[in-house]
Image (cartoon, rainbow, N blue to C red; front, top):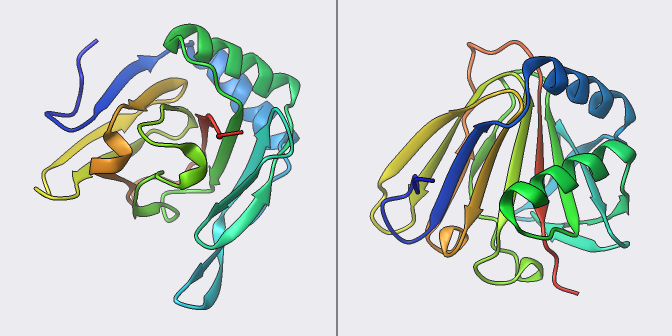
Length: 192
């Protein structure tokens, strides 16, 4: 499988790993069964509550701190266990947690960032599944500023590995063209 990054990291796009009907069914189940909460961030001492909703699940009650706020992992749902096993089989990687995001429409996105928190370890593998609306996703090198973009389809899998988080930022840009919701699952391995 071709690496989408020209250097300093590894990103592999598997494309759709399930058909539209199965992907739509998972979207509906995740939308209804996940304990969604508005995400929070503390930036320069100011407290923000996002329109985007998030949830955190894992093998145990892991704490995960990002944007200066801490989440505690909930126990896996049946659907998350199924998707975790599917992704582990395709990537040959074990994951112990999953951060989920619900974007209600294209107005909600995610600014440039890296998933490089100490709790994830260095050169970690993150598997990202997308359900619902197709959205643009981009990478930007931290030094050269080179950018690479692709569209993430309903029922697709993207895997970021190696030095990607150390050297590249990624973003989900807002867009007026998308009126449908998107659910994103990022399977991760927290250090014990």
